[in-house]
Image (cartoon, rainbow, N blue to C red):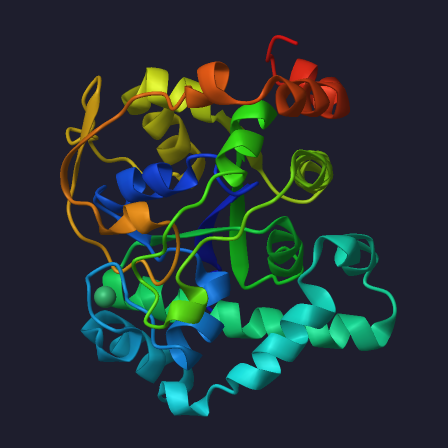
Length: 306
Ligand SMILES: [Zn+2]
């Protein structure tokens, strides 16, 4: 068997600033950032949404090559089957079963599902010679990936203050990469729903520590000192390269072949880094109180004032 492919997986709850972290890593020599690969099968292959380079997924030369090398072409990937497997194994409620490897029928589905990722990561790494970054965030996917010896998985646990996350999910945000009206907006969630999700997902990421290296990255620390935190992640990835593109309050970003993710992946040039603290002034008091009460134990653990 060839050497395992090293994959840095950004795990965390959506709206935790992971896109900027991923984009920052994408500019480092020896790193290949792929975007949120969990959405590739649906948004890229089926819906034909845009790659970070601006091309529709199937027209992007990078992803074309990856598809050829990994699967002999994307037409050999059964996207409906991937959607079925994802619904079966790649969900937060399935993590205990995936972790135990029982029942055997489920373990077989995890294997089939994760094998697509093994092939894709390996192809991307072979083509670019770099460590691969997947910013899918979804913790259940990390649990599926850690079952495979072909992947040398390193997890970055991205945490953000739950009150900022909840405020962000309560707002209406457009999705410029969508090619149809139907998918033109990001979904919105209530404060209790985000709180439950935040607790469960963070706990399931913590539990991964028993299987693979996990390094915590607080969004608030990243925006305060992006160069230092980027170097910390590169250490986890065992990548020795300069981070000259990272300034104290701006990061110089080029375009990347991020297959899916936050609309921010289309921004290039000098992107200002500042803490998005709008929730402190604008979040309704009821929302803030509810989220603080519901998420208090982990908020304290992560060093956020109550
Ligand atoms: Zn592209």
